[in-house]
Length: 65
Image 1 (cartoon, rainbow, N blue to C red):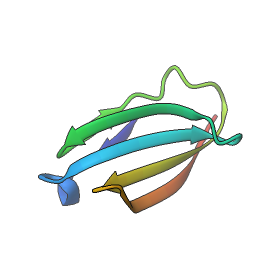
Image 2 (image 1 turned 180 degrees about the vertical axis):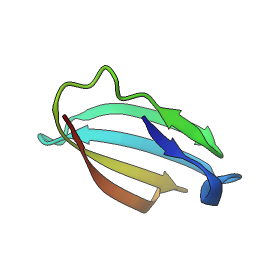
Image 3 (image 1 turned 120 degrees about the vertical axis):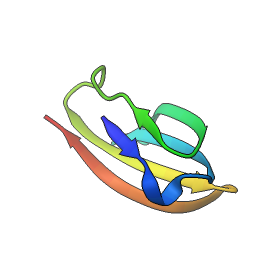
Image 4 (image 1 turned 60 degrees about the horizontal axis):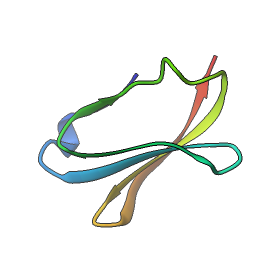
């Protein structure tokens, strides 16, 4: 699971997860902390993007084994 928490507590966020072919796997709109379930993802590499007001504020690569 991916836990978006403390530093982003009261900010409206859009969380997106993409596969290596740039296909959007999931998207979630939230205010504050959230958990993005990853148990249904197949093994592979994914790219996480967190946006606020349509601006990218964080990105990371996730490898699921």
